[in-house]
Figure 1 (cartoon, rainbow, N blue to C red):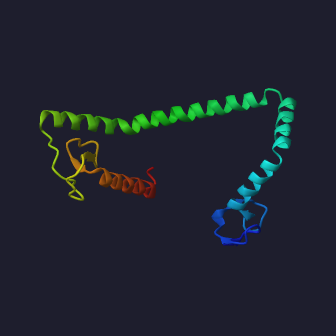
Figure 2: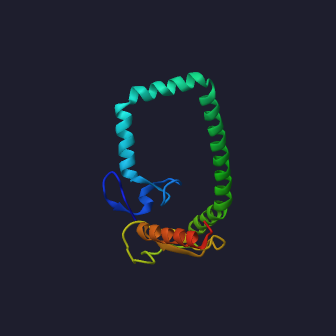
Amino acid sequence: MQTCNECGIQKPLSHYHKHSLHALGVRKKCKQCACAATKKWYSENKEHHIGNCKKWQEQHPGAVETANKKYEKSQQEKKTKFVEKHLADNSKRETAQLITKYLMFKGELAVPDCCKICADKRGSLTAHHHDFSKPDDVVWLCGSCLGWVQKKYIKEQKVSGVA
């Protein structure tokens, strides 16, 4: 805990920006006060700031374009990796969903009258797979229970270090 020099409120260290030179490793103003001070300074010095930016750009021609191209390239690489990982991770899921739809179409898999968890009979039910390698092994859940189960699954993955 640290007391903010601006507002005087004692807050956890997570409410302060990091600063390696200070004793606790954080700045003296909390994030909220620091952001407010920055906005105030900018509103009072907008023309001065814009002038400095233009002056810097004139002194460094092409630097902004180079930085933008570098950033776009790095983002494209990240996006490509994300898409490839998503496709690899979700191919089993999508296959299981297609097989489930096919089994429903053939009449080999029936939708029950109520949600497996809360027994709610209102609204539509969704097939939830615990294991995508078993597409016919589904639990039928309403929207709110499905959301709850998925959030619980994501938390478990983060705790176990899988996600």
